[in-house]
Image 1 (spheres, rainbow, N blue to C red):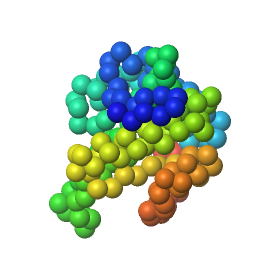
Image 2: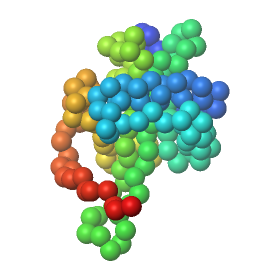
Image 3: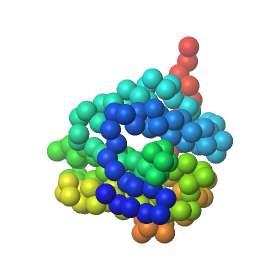
Length: 167
């Protein structure tokens, strides 16, 4: 467990489910403000089902930052990527995506850094060799946070919208 001045990082448990759902929904609202055409606010029951499954399966990690008063003030998910299929040209490399959320009033106090360090330690122990953080280009704070921690551009994703199919 990583300890900092304002919180302790530990693995999430089922009792954290309400806090995990609240963090995910708050994060969704913040992203909706960035780009309402890209983001949505998921249903709380679907979010709860997701976290329940991740915690039960034990394949991926959910870590929380807990303040001294017991409040969960942040979380990070480490979600493993599937290896590329045999027919593709990419070599398999154990990798995962990280998703970090910290309550706005706890940012800039080392909570996110402690969560990320704990996630990287967990991933290393699992044999994961590459972590990625999918960040929307308009989310300047998140881009700056991950860059400060050594994350950089790792490729380019190109795309274009297609017309809706005819009725």
